[in-house]
Image (cartoon, rainbow, N blue to C red):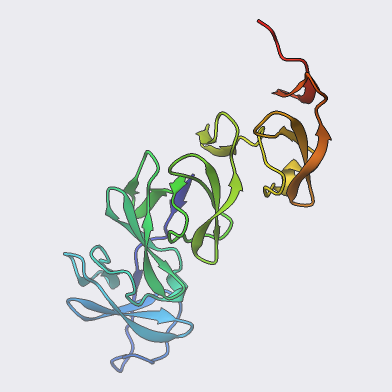
Length: 240
């Protein structure tokens, strides 16, 4: 449910005889202040420059360099060695290093964004289709509760329809998509292969097969599709 960022751009102060600069050789985790608002950080064995826009800027204490990235902007350069390092940009948003750039990530879940012990926790259990995300494969519910979203190539995409009564919801910290009601052609997860659902008009049963729901059985006249725990069947409606 929560994304945990790595420690915020901390590194060992380089005690070399010559002053390092952009392109100088370094070891993973090395860092150095260029000035009060810029730092050199190591990326794949060479220093790159990154901004430190937070109120504490760039500072060195006890041979350790710290770069305050609070206030950094989406698109600012970061080291790919620091993939996932993050801070809260506000109560409902996070700034995270992803693919060599800082990106803004929405934290729409109930717990928003919070920092503890130098780590950012972003509740991404609720998201919108097309929004930026960090970890491919991470799931979320759409804000309207009708879709299950999956992070793919850095963007949330609507993957599954949740047409059942409970829609898409967060249950005990896990994403749950109610697929007890489905249309022929709706996508379905491999975990639901072979399971059944009712059509919206309750006149037929569909089955998850090969990644999509397909028509399995038309209910006979006078019967309706009933989706119950452990059973989906055509039966006469309850007259009570």
